[in-house]
Image (cartoon, rainbow, N blue to C red; front, side):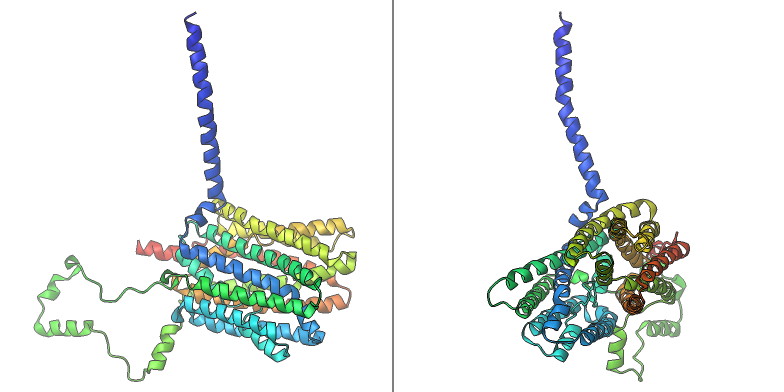
Length: 497
């Protein structure tokens, strides 16, 4: 009889201990999820890091909104289809020149200044599109104000922001930061597109609102977003600027000084002190020459060799992407299967959100198998699905391959950005990332021309097959050339330690 209370007591103690154990398990599970998805990394990041991610969301929101109605707006102004195509090409080529110049001198001029300048020009272009209907004025505003013809990232901002994020983020969590940076950009594009469609449809249903007037209202929103981007850019701190090089005249420990040099003759002493002084500037140097040298970045020969290989590989991948841009994929499904563009728009919105979330999964995978293997093993299936899209005659199977491709196609973005940041030295990132982005833009611009020619001959399917094959070749080449590559940043840190 005495044992019964003890048994009940032990049972009650066991039951009382269960909730804390369950709570501990849930807490550990939550901590594990926040670590795997990079939530703890982005929440624990600096204020500047969060502001840069928010800047990309604002910019891509504006791009997504303006891209949806850009061609329609020009058409409402009685611009011919040929001149609309010319408008897109001029905008793209003008952007390449401006991006090259600004990314080349961004570190010398100041990254925050370049970002603020871009935001101001973005707002100004929105104002011009709102009130002007002159074709060439709009071309100039599109070039200098960076109006995206495709909704994708253009201009120098991405290279500058990625270089700054690499500087602000430790290498251990850099892939997490880039994953959230990419996710917020994709989310911004999707939200901008669906918001623009809703606003235009709502405005056109009102009395007195013509399509042209509704389109101008969207560009008014674009101008407002440029002002918002400028205000956020003003909140960035000087930590975003390139690291200041240490002075050459650092204090020297007495133990490191050669004792014999202290006992040398007066002549040797005088010679030593005179040689330690800074050399006078060469007579041939001019202030303008010195200024240009201080603004231009310094890229080592070792980094140039790496960048050359990466530019060739990225150009192959971008040309393949240019063969099957979203607008032409929509055209393919509309003409072959008679699917309304509105249904495809909703589908692409959903797949864009899924693709954005997949970047967090890619970041978790990269912590286990490395950046290069993550890039290849997630991107290679996407290339295979892309090549298979035109194979089935049934719309269901073709749409299935399209959805699978869309959900996997951007999983390599965050690991690729993190790898590029680690492959070069910190003082080279802005210029190198600018060159890489320009190379990708130029390579991608040639794809639509080829696809347009093939589509005119009824051979659209070749573009999907060639694009998938090129992307697969790119993946295998990256695996062959860079698997096990440590990166110059790691080598530099090892030498310093």
